[in-house]
Image 1 (tube, rainbow, N blue to C red):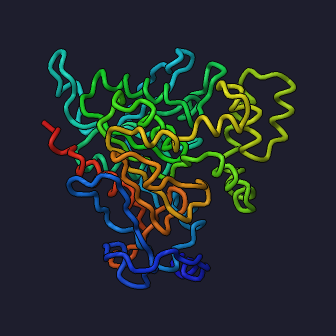
Image 2: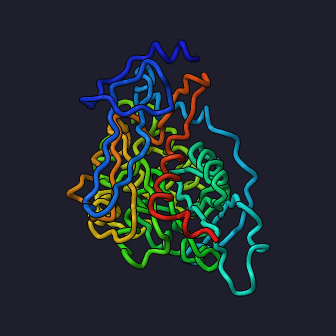
Length: 377
């Protein structure tokens, strides 16, 4: 596989200088840049390990498609079923405990060990490659981990008319509030659609958020431009069927009219599905109204608690990304030249293996930077 990958054509890099050395490889490095931006001029700034893949691994589509083949096995999750914010559907919370929670609690006391909550992407779950990689990395730190599934995901069908959407901050708040009844120190991670929902939540709820800090990865914070990106040739031919077909099957099993069934069966673009199904089911007038109101970008200037946004400039999904002028001083932006969509696949030359741990390592480093270690008792 290695020899085949090296033969792939790679896009031009936007970087103008080499990033500092990291431990991902020692030869054939791409001329890549990892840019960190923040409006906070007080104190030290977060400095991640640069993402600098070898030149033959910089193609954004390789970065997007290959990581699932190099993910670790899923851990043995402990599942809890909890009602959603509307009390319509059951949703799954898959925990990977650092230790049995009940044994560490006295009556009436909250669990002190940090809990990292993951909000997955479109049609994602605790079995997604990024969830598995993050679960193991978090567990290695001695922290608790949980994937909070959106309605209809994780193998549990939605019972009501409402599914999930990228702007449902009420559901995010409900999930975090529910967890805060047992855990004191909560931190959140959102990926893709879940990243937009989490980033929007951080700005919309501001000081009232139920987490001490958050990281959003590969997040389409401007959903209109993201929808346009998905209408490119490769987006339409490769990524759309992969994302759209599962949710169409779910929709067809829900309570819908014969007219809706026929219309949905003809859909071949995510934007069309959003117009026909997602928007009206979730209180939006149209797909355009949905994209405008659900996008996190307008809310980022109101973020109060620490938020890290990680975006690859070659991501084929996410469209426009946030700039320093769009965000508050509580937001840190990491823009990498390469990484694709939830990719960040490295090749460890010294170990002669592929690795998808750049995201989990960066998440852990950021949470430590904002003070998570000091809260472990």
